Image (cartoon, rainbow, N blue to C red; front, side, top):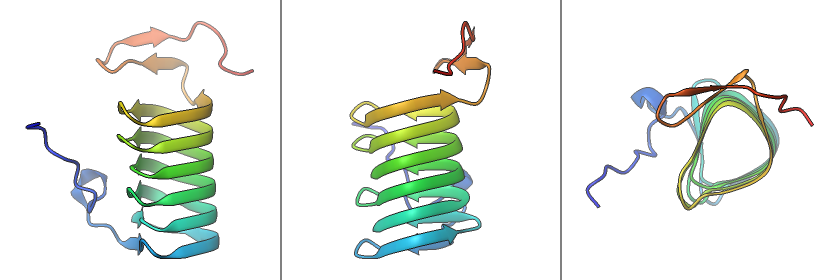
Amino acid sequence: MFGKKADQSRAPGGAPISTILGEKTRVQGELEFNGSMRIDGTFDGTLKGEHLIIGNSGVVHGDVRCSNCICHGQIHGQLACDSIQLKHGSYFEGTLLTRELSVDPGSTLNGDIRQHEDEIHLINGEKIEKIGSIEH
């Protein structure tokens, strides 16, 4: 009720977003970006870059590789990143490879999740040593 809403117009760290894919825009193919990108439309293909924000209306189908991702919309496919935040109302389906994962209540996460590191970090900062392999 009194909490701050996340500013979807800025990248992590408060930097302005340098590339925007508008709500009624659909792009297919390969796209590589520097800095921050926000997707409010639909992207199908291979996406590589640094900071990725997927807005409420944003949909990504394909292979995504980025430093970090904040998702308010949908991702279908393969995502490899250092950190991902799945915000309330977001949807992820596919394969996820990440070091840090944050899933808000009200988001949907379906698929295969793999972790880069040999330890698991809990929300409160405590660590649990890896007991077994996370490989299948």
